[in-house]
Image (cartoon, rainbow, N blue to C red):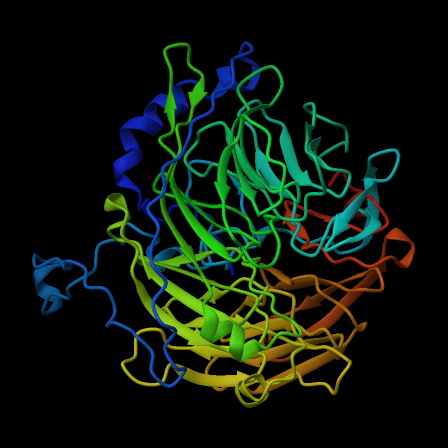
Length: 551
């Protein structure tokens, strides 16, 4: 899938502001120190509707958009064909494309709001390690649900960002288990800026602002969501939002949301930034939409003044009764998918939700899609050009609902009837876990997915048939990526593999290369201009390029 750098912009409302941002692009890399700011967000909270039975799904027809009535072709070529203008909330033409052309880079998890763009080639042909970072492993101790263990490297939701700075440096930005957000020169593996220190591990992928503002957004297991300015001599936290469950000790200085919550208080998902709004789920089972109010001040420094304009509890008693008391997880760990005025996400109880965000300016985001798949959905939802959604679910509750639907499910969120199109199955017997933690990669008529049982599978998007499978290692969670006609995938035994997918339903293995001493690779690889960047659970980030080449 080749990126089209000339695709139309879909965020016309920001054009005036982007002119200002562009004018200070060089300055913000080296600007003077600026002060941090903090605001208190007010919330508009929805009342959770009664969860509809899975056979009764609230849905609407495809959102209407204005069509042109004037000629779209030369008059001699026949009748005119109406053409939809780009949708202001993630147009279908952006599927498979980089997120905008203001910032050149892989700037959010899976590249764009539909989770369908994975980087820029070429992919290395003869791999070797070009560098590893840092000198000592990225490790720290972390407590999760009462258990304290040592965590090293980058987790299964972590993907490094790679972008081209205005000063010519290709920079990586990633969080790690050493409780830091790192900034690294992609060419040399040396630090470019001081890291941001947090109070616990960072599992998710950060997001670089897609509209040119010098901002990066990320969450941590210290229960905070942060907005960081990059236009000071060192990165500065401008704003933070903290979940406080009952019994938590929450210090002053954060925008606090005290909630009953049910599960945890981490932020795993990558913030989605669209039209000056940030979309983010929490492991407390709540979902949040913020109006960022980004601006450039009189000194040329970026400012933010976020308002929490929408929040919702993603679970109710009926859903908790369905999943049962033995594993009552209801966290939102996947990254939001946005497509033509809808935001899709799911929780760990298997509830898949679609919100209509076209009136979010007034704090309105009604539920227009609601479906229960029967088990934990931590992988991000993928949306194709037709607006069909693909949901990857784990299989660890062993409920009949999940057994009947499958673990990779195609849904039609616009039908008035049953949205279920097909399911691909990855079942196991207790206590073995099946299903998928990885987010699939969307190719040409095929989804490439990785199962917890250790198989890389090519699934026909029309029929759900398994066209091809490759045996890797059990416990593989890394999400595969497609760049040009190459498929890159990592596995739990520390191997990277590259396949030729010129024939989409019959990938051909090109090479296998192990890094990190065989430690698991859970994180998603980033492919950028001849190199693969990926973290290992041994504690290090690696750059893999061609033997005897500068790349």
